[in-house]
Structure formats: C-alpha cells, structure tokens
Amino acid sequence: MNKKAQLGDHTMFPMFLIFIIIIAVGIAIGINSFFGAKYDFRHIDSEILNNILKECLLNNNLNLSDAKEIQETCKVNIQIIQDEMLLIIKQEEKQVLKLGRGDETSCELAEKNENFPKCTISEITLSNKKAKIITGSSQWSKQKLAGTNTAEEAAR
Image: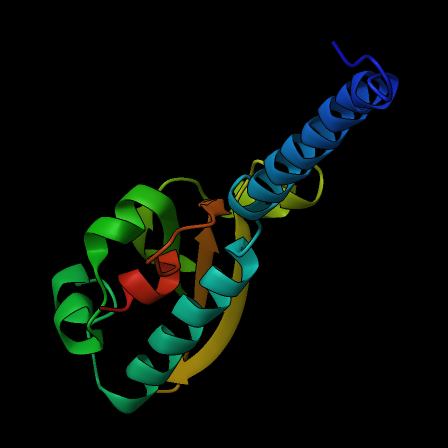
C-alpha cells in the first residue's frame, strides 16, 4: 500500500463540495431572476388601449354606449377587458360605457396601493361634445416564453 500524497486528495474533497454548492446557488438565482420576476406593464397596457380607442373613435363615427359596435369597429376584445382591464367612456360628465373591474376611484387610489389598476385618461371631441376615455390595467405580467402583454391581446 502506497500512502504517500493521499492527504491532498482528502483535502480537495471539501473544496469540490464548496464549488458544487456555489454553482448550484448561482443557477438557482439565475433561473429565479429570469422566470420569477414580475414586470409592471400595467401603465403601458392602459396607454396602448387608450391610444387604440382614441384613434378609432376619432376616425369613426361610433355610438359610444354600444360596446359591440366598438368591439367590431376598433377590433377590441371585450372579454379580456372584462377580465383584466378597465374601460370607462364618459360624455359630458355622464358615464356612457363601463367595462371591466373597478371605477375612477380605484384609478385614483393606484398611487397609494400598488394592487389597484394603473390608469390612463384622455379627452377627445366628438360631434362638438367632449368625451373622456379612461382605461386601466390590473394585470401584473410575468415572464412568459411565448406571451404577449394584455393590451396587445385586447386589441386583437
């Protein structure tokens, strides 16, 4: 039996375990940071939907209270708006169309509580009457391999 130089083999085993642990922790942190992070696209979602509706309403003479006509003409998916977003159209301070969860108050409270929808408000003039378009999104986005964001889905 040759027992010379075996001490080096025994002292390298703990170093080998330390390197394996460091590599495993690095892989776990990398996967968690890529797939586990939430992205707050709510304000961008509401801006996209607001711009789509504003352009559509300015270019077409639509009945603002008819959700089906807006859906067909503007190519807006009402089901996604009902589930994840908020759409309010007011004309002369009277609410003519409301789709989705929430109201203007929940938009105002978004600054105090991050769980409320982020909203975008724009005003347009249709037939010499001012109309206000309020859109909001309450959908937190997560990393998806082949996903799109909610406003793009709603505009299809």
